Length: 179
Length: 193
Image 1 (cartoon, rainbow over the protein chains, first blue to last red):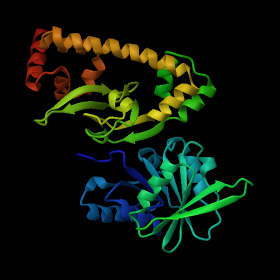
Image 2: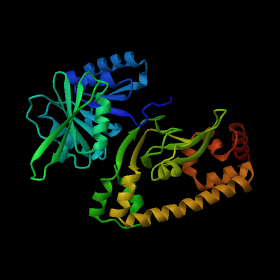
Image 3: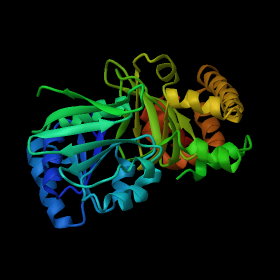
Image 4: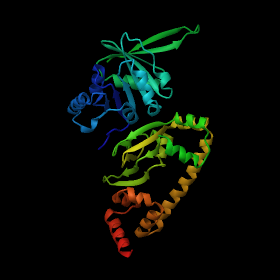
């Protein structure tokens, strides 16, 4: 059983959402996927779809607990409504230390970063628009990992870098990546 | 989640509550299912592993596909391909789980940062290094100086838990014996009891 779960397990929390399904099915050939959502029947259907894509029973697992999924994962993708994200962040904090977390946000949604709730994790925010995903985070390695993961999806990836000007005004530098 | 590690450290050095909070921030908690890998030959060993729960093995696979057990790690044991971990060169070993496991993993940059922030951990790892050298010397003597039967009986006496948990074919490999030889030795020892 070579390469099974070898340092590349991705937990998709909120796997039954539209974006969750797309991310899970897009990355499943490159990463082992841990699907987590409250509706176990829907998650099982998605898992079977992924097994058909990968032709590998070990490529996907279903879980009903966000903490267990995050504990087993190397990377965590949080695709739940923003109102639920802080509660989940608190729940997974102790098992997410030093791990990369993609905080998925729909466009035009008021949100705050969950980084302060996960001080020892590397949170990368990903704002989804129709065709683009805007990626932003403080940790370069985590941002690169997020970009690699999202490169399997249909979104065009735009990295938004924040830096401070001399007069302490925030300015954004946009880098886009060709698919 | 950190119970076994903290108990293991506190046996050797003292950590304050503040030290414990800092220590925890450097480790990646990771659940591993039986037969999953944390290291494969040809990859760099990126993590020093501590087993909070479960059982791991580190082994080399020769050109004929035969597995040679190097080390086992269960609750309270550290494991890594030390050379690959420290040098960044690729590893010749595999590490996988024999039982479902809960690990605490630390990268080399975090390991170095932890030692800078918590100097008491330098002493802890110095003690571990001494113990490791002694156990490697003992294993070398065991390998070159004793008969197959003596190798087995000495290992069983020193590590009764290992005999209970680890499949006999893996113990045979660890001792450099064939499974058939180990089976004959075990039958002989049973008859003589």
